[in-house]
Length: 123
Image (cartoon, rainbow, N blue to C red; front, side):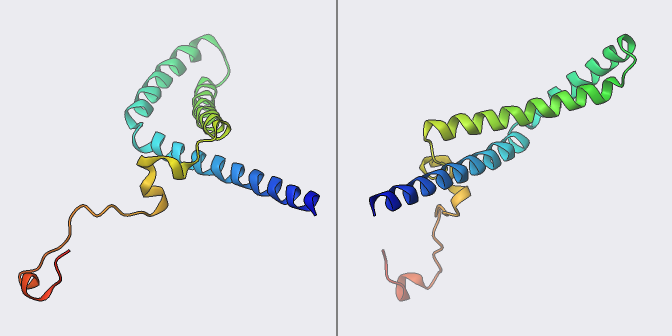
C-alpha cells in the first residue's frame, strides 16, 4: 500500500515538473518574441554582417551557418532558462506577473451607470 502511494506521488511530481518546464518554455519564448523584439533586431543585424564577412572567408553558405547558429542560440537560451527555473522549483502559478497566463483578470475599473446609485447595491 505504501509502495503504491509513493509510486503515484513520484509520477505526479514528474508530471508536474514536465508541465512546469513546458509552461516556462512557452512563456519565455513568447516573452523573447514580444518583449525582446529590439534584441531580435540587433541579432539579425549582427547576423547579416557576420554572414557577409564569413562569405568571403569560407566557401560554405555562411548565411545558413549564421542563421542556424542564431536560431540554435535562441532555442538553447529559452530551454536552459526554463530548465533552471523548473529545477529551482519556481512554478509559473507562483509568479505574480504571469496572471495573464492563468486567465486571472485584474479588475482595473468597475462600470458605473447613471442610474446605478438609485438601483444598484453599493459595494
